[in-house]
Length: 270
Ligand SMILES: Nc1ncnc2c1ncn2[C@@H]1O[C@H](COP(=O)(O)OP(=O)(O)OP(=O)(O)O)[C@@H](O)[C@H]1O
Ligand SMILES: [Mg+2]
Image (cartoon, protein in one colour):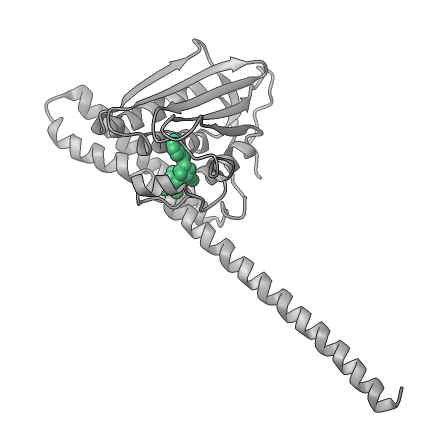
């Protein structure tokens, strides 16, 4: 090979490697942009979640002026939801990134039954407005897990919100919790529109919405279940979805490891 031919070949190689590097950097930039979008969508979703019960409780507070019990209940809902928003904004400011799969968990030994009671109470309000029948059944006694109460509230709030959203007025929704082996098993079941076989394996992926769901409810980002999956995973648990077919209802089952009495109390940062 002559010297200029050698130089030309070297230039070609250099060009090719520059081209590959440019493609790599462009792809990395695109990925980072998508991650940012997904993070923003997640945060928007999570900030929006408490707004509905907050708005309903604020509306009902007016009519409950002469009913101390109802007044206190609505006040507690408002306080609870504001606390949830405060916590989320705190996470945002701390730069913790749900989209990147990073959570700041504050896990401690807790009775998940009490978390469920609180979530059920909050969701009852919006289910009542849709005339849905909501039942809660759980094992008597404590269901101890090493959990972050605010994050578990998000998990079951998202699942129950979906059940209500994708179940027609007058439908039935149930929440049950029991100890099975070394797990606490929590099931959220409805008799709503169900999930198509094509969508079922993907519903926990971010931005996935079943085509039928978009017809029933235009609002929705397809983010809630991805948050559920990440949070449950961060609790060393698992979540699965079942559906027997269209209009056959849906069931979401969450498994969380039972915390033994001698489990070390700890603040876990992930
Ligand atoms: N209980 C349910 N019944 C029927 N379909 C459901 C149910 N829960 C989830 N889905 C399906 O899974 C999809 C993803 O749910 P996900 O909660 O992630 O998003 P979304 O409800 O569409 O929007 P958002 O981000 O506001 O929660 C829904 O769009 C719907 O197709
Ligand atoms: Mg949802």
